[in-house]
Amino acid sequence: MKLLSVFIAFMLAFFIGRRILMKLYVFSFRRRLFDPIDDRKTHLGLIPRMGGMAFLPTQGAIFFLVIIILRSLNIINVDYVVLVRFLMLFMGLGLLFVTGIVDDLMSIYYKWKFVAQTVAAMLIPVSGLWIVHLDGLFGIVLIPAWIGIPLTILIIVFIINAFNLIDGIDGLCSGLTILACTVLGTLSFRHESWLPVIFSFITVGTLAPFFYYNVFGKSKRRRRIFMGDTGSTTLGLTVSFLVLSYAVGDPAELHPGGNLLVAFSVVLVPALDVLRVILLRLIKRKPLFKPDNTHIHHYLLRLGFSKYAVLLIILMLASGFIVFNMLFVKFVNNNQTMICLLDIALWFTIIWIISLFKPRQAKVGQSKTVIHEIGLQECVQQSADMQADIIQNIELQDNELQEIENRELAGVELIEQTK
Image (tube, rainbow, N blue to C red; front, top):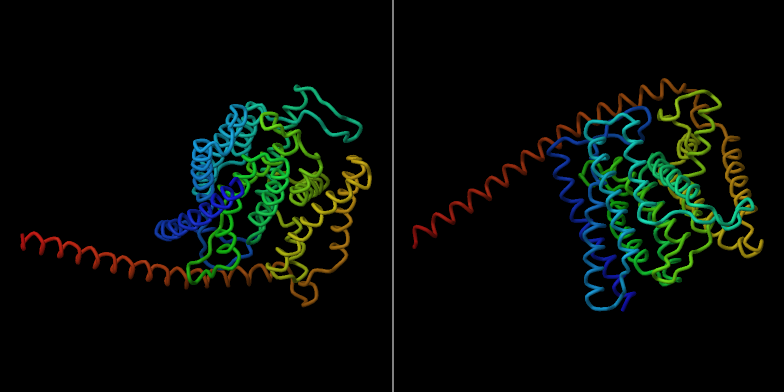
């Protein structure tokens, strides 16, 4: 019965999330809420960027609805400790949701975004969820609260920014989140920790229609949308909460906690990529929060891979790290330090191998500046053409709606006259 409840929650999230996305299409086109085109973007044309607005309402509504129903039918027991954790999570998600919407609409200075992320991260330890042990990592087992709480806040803020920065090509952030939630939901199921299981697969169901439209949607047919900072930051907090829930455990449901590095393996690719970028910026004395083109997906795109190939490669890398940590932890007797060092060495080895290949632009003899200018000209031209088509389509839709309203009014008048 519990598995059936999880499946029903997943399907509800899928259909309701898809419905909300359809509404956001119309709203975004009517309000001209499109993602700007610049030298860091890989898309052409006018594409809405408010898709992330569908995530939190779907997650929250379905999660609490399912919990209330299951609790009333005595299918699961909801403890106060668990309820407080999720209430604090949704408070943090709400803060990032509002901040993300404002940032997507009018842009916010990065320092204020960092403050909002920090406050949202602080709500998780307030709920009683923070890192209490390192599972032997670097010889450290138990850690006191005065270290565990700041460390937890720092890790959450780092993961939020990692998911925000990795959102550089279609489907990458949502794909990594789907992978992370699927793995964490399955691991939590093995420990019979049902609330994280339900929430994980609700998130997967919410993201599934977005992933399809984001990756395979056609711009000209108005079937493509981006998540914006509203989506990437809330997804980062969602994943970090699920990672901590599995790693620390849930005393109320007799869940002792899982392997620390196995839990964090689902965020290794975005985390290590951001760590590498930060180190590069520090070495080159560049601003830490200024966007650039040094992430792994930028490297792969410059090598000539398509966006679909880059997406597949990175998702395979993320899956490889997860499988590697799950299998290797048994062969080294849970030696967390060795596994951590192997993960870091393996990641930087992969980056070094990628850097050995020459970018595709160098082969055709075109400079980066010329390619950039050509790309911008193509973007501007296509954007102008698409904008004209979109305005024409919206006007046609408005005319059709007006005709329908006139027919309804005429029908009402006819009924009144008949009476």
